[in-house]
Length: 358
Image (cartoon, rainbow, N blue to C red; front, side):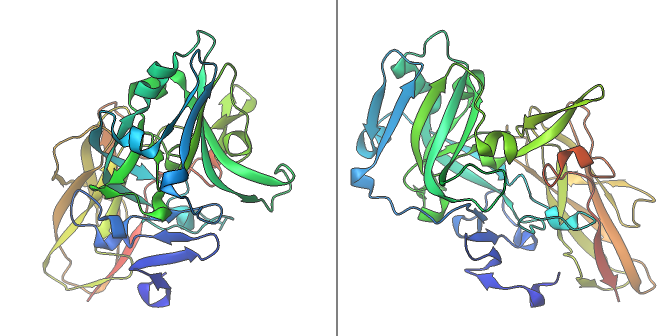
């Protein structure tokens, strides 16, 4: 799909108007940090209208000292600022064949922001988690009716859980992105940021943190945002968690025209979880041959690395297929095809970008 056939809102591609889902044109990738106004918007329900002065975050469940904290007290706690890449679990869904249901993201449901907030571990420490605690449910304020046959009756609230060990390691309760207060569409007044995980875990408009003594089986944990994991011949429904290794091409963009017999900069970004990107390769002939690219950024935990390659274009006009392929420090490389057990999520197979040489 070319830009000419797409609808834009505030410089982003409109994928849905209700609920609001906006994609960053990935061809605009330039700096390491994604500008706040360019960062993609993912919502499941109408954006909640929250009065900061009336808002409270409750921490409860399997804890010795449940408590509630307001905005002013929260932002007065010791904070950290860290860059983290968030990718929607359905990013690149539009590349799947045959076409599937869901928001038809191309490449731009991903971005890297410097998030400022309070480590979740600090609030869990204050609450004194009981020995029985094993997971932490993050509950947002966004809610509404689901038009799905397997959804619960009545209104549903968006909620996800993470293991207690992850919650205590690096999860951030963020109130700023790129140094400014969260905009309403990105979770004001508070959202979770779960580094290295698909972004459905980074719950927005946070209102409750609930420590539980058993696995959480909510709709967005087991029915949606889940995949089939094989144990021999048995397939188990499993929540999505860690990002898979992936590289994407920003420019030239799909359908772009480049001159013959010229040096053209091909660039993009790559990311993974539990390690770092160590290599990005580029094919300019549909995968017949590969060239190693130059990594631009120093490795930062849970953040992408940009890359670039100077491509000498062919002397003859015609269509060329560009493909990027990333490898990380754990030796994981992008597959050629999408794993059908992942359904419409975790799309990290190599993505062909067709350009015109003229």
